[in-house]
Image (cartoon, rainbow, N blue to C red):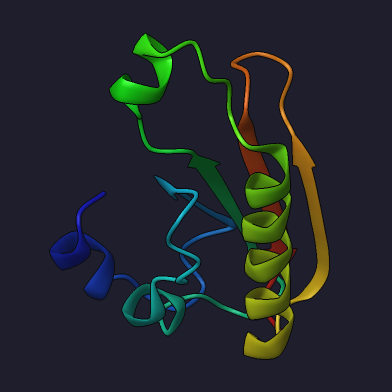
Length: 104
C-alpha cells in the first residue's frame, strides 16, 4: 500500500502494518503511524544493504555493527512509545532483522 492509499484509511482499518527497510535506517514511518489504532502490530523487516566490494574481497558481514543497528532500532521503537517490542534475526532469508511491537 502506498502512502497516499494509507493516508485515507480509517484509524481502525489495519490490524497489522508491515514494512521493509535497510538495516542502516532505524526510522519508523511516522506519517503512517498516525493512521494506526491502539493495539495494531507493526512489523519491520530490515536487511543490510548490499556491499558488493566486501563480497568480492571475501569479507563477511560485520556482526557487531549489525547487532548495534538492531539495538538502536529497538531503542527507537521503545522511545516512540511502542510496547511489547521483540526482535530477532531470521534464518531464511539470512541476515534479516525482524522487529515487531504494538501501538499504544
